[in-house]
Figure (cartoon, rainbow, N blue to C red):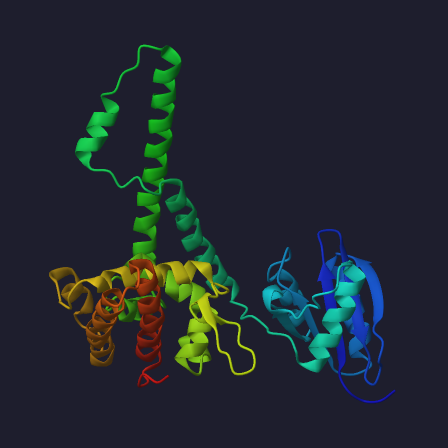
Length: 347
């Protein structure tokens, strides 16, 4: 057998694994089907490793990162592939697990796949906890009412018993959701003050519109900013790059791709709305910035000046506010990248 790496691609489901195997020098993949059990997976890779180096991959899906941890625990390099970035033939209308495994193993050997970052288990736990708070936020979205409005709601009475009961149950459910949200906010605040989150959260909080929750979302969703060599890579990761349909001499750019991390993108866009206002250092922002590195505070102040001018320019030239804010969010990512990597801002 020709020496080289054996490539393995797995198409996973709850009950079974369809495995595509490309031996060194082989043109056609071998396909095996095994039950989705840890001992059988271990036996497969132990057998393959006796023959030489092995590299594995699978598309992110039902197994999450557990399958990756099983495989790497066996001493095999593994990549978790972003499904949305896997090349697909437009005319292909037949999809089976076997075809998927064959296609994936061919593509991984050709180097045509895009791997995603696999977080550590502790990091994944904090990320899921912050996402839990986001789920509660969606339950109470648009319910930021004043005390006077709450008093009015609780004073409402209906003569029809069924309507009155409906109101009582709805208010009770909403109050429970708000209480859960407040409790989660307190826990996230305490977590942000502990190590290893205190310092990176503090740096992010220097920026206008980024409070503790938004800083934690950016931290757990993006992780290490240094893995992005340029700010445009981070913009693309967050789906804040423009779509493009260019051919020949004609260039046509469209709306944002929105192909990246939705949680982090939402946090950045919500922060970008604050740059509609004139640059300033209010008491809350000054308190958040106190004691933080001069470089971070400098990037944050330059972001206020630049992004406010950018917003005013776009709106003044006929751009609608949501579109202008999207453009501001894209540039805000660049300032965040520079602050988090301690580098000068470059294109």
